[in-house]
Image (spheres, rainbow, N blue to C red):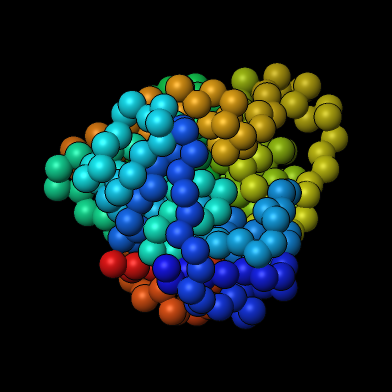
Amino acid sequence: MKAVVCKSFTGPADLRVSEINEPMPADDEILIDVHAASVSFMDQLLVSGLYQMRPPLPFVPGTEASGVVVAVGNKVIQFVPGDRVACSSWTGGYAERMIAKESKSARLPDGVAFEAAATVLHNYGTAYYALVERARAQRGETAFITGAAGGVGLAAVDLGRHLGLRVVAGVGSDDKAALVRSYGASDVVNYRSEDLRDKLKSITSGQGIDIGFDTIGGAIFEQMARLMNWGGRLMPIGFTSGTIPSIPMNLPLLKNYAIIGVFAGAWAEKYSAEAARMNDTLMQLLADGKIRPHIDRVLPLEDVIEAMHAVANRTVQGRIILKIR
């Protein structure tokens, strides 16, 4: 079968489309014909050797995809061949066929397109786990979301709107403001051209933010730590800046706010039944039109290098999709 192969942790430029053997599902796995795969910042980190885990080489990148089940393992009870599904996995999505755990897959409701479905489990799963499970977000609270025009960030803006939050979107360029406003952000901060402290204090009338959803790390997170409301929840989601922040621990003490780690992938591995229920919930929200993933562009599998460079250079709004079938 045709697949993108990573043979070294040297970045997207060395990826190649090759013919490889078809994977075989284990007892708790399904095998799917992949129709669409999502390109994420995490995929770019994995092929560059910059993620916190490294798969054995060579491997097929691709953490999220959608398609049709063609075979199931002996212990699989939720799916049968012919089911339309979305699935997530650490690797394997950029191929004509991939395997995924039954617990990390979700059936697609009627009318849900493969392209949209391939953007939900990682993006919206991270946002849902952070806002609903970890932050216990309450209607009317103010949430500041960094990287708000990216895949995970825009999903958090969209889901935050659905949850009734006052969403403040943080972006790195003004051309992203219109998109995040169209997804429900009531206020937008360009943290490259505006003073983040002054802007957030003005927006919140000096109270600070209730929920900090940060995908960037570095100096942005360190500033957010000084802008929390009493009893707030500050959540590190990722470190796309490349810098892991450090903050004085008297800051959460003085405001009685919590710093809450969010690693949705590890949670899904440890609590697979809860994660499966969340995935089904997200697919129903998608089918009902209550969330609406944004697809920046759809490219053929052979354009994977272009797609990954666009993600790395932060020129993508929402997600890029690789069309396999």
